[in-house]
Length: 152
Image 1: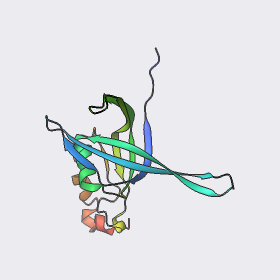
Image 2 (image 1 turned 90 degrees about the horizontal axis):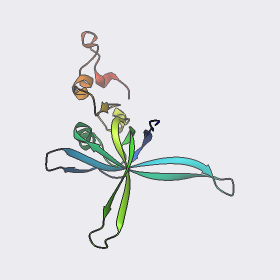
Image 3 (image 1 turned 60 degrees about the vertical axis):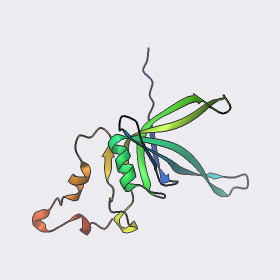
Image 4 (image 1 turned 180 degrees about the vertical axis):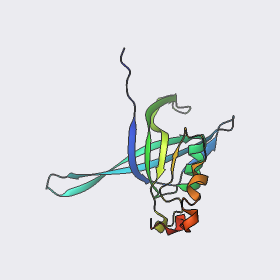
């Protein structure tokens, strides 16, 4: 049988600050909403923005990056997969559903000039080293160029 594909790419802004929690085993989890916008013409021929809201979940190191660097309004590029989970509501007994994007990779797109010191920092949940440390070290130390010299 053929293998299916479940891959999502989103570029948008956080709708509110991330909500953080931890499992009993100590795994860090970040939940947040992301708004994406699309322009469409209405019946009168005028352009209108249509906003779509997405529920996202990040785990472990990626969740820590979200906690430390993302806030309401932060622009991010996300790669992940769609998952729908279900449960029985304790009060009504009805089956409830929630569709979420499980984040595999996250890139922070806010520039330094907007007050965010991360400046395009990218973090993959599968990376084996701390990219924040690597990104903070100047590449041209012998020439005196640092991250602060970059205009974005």
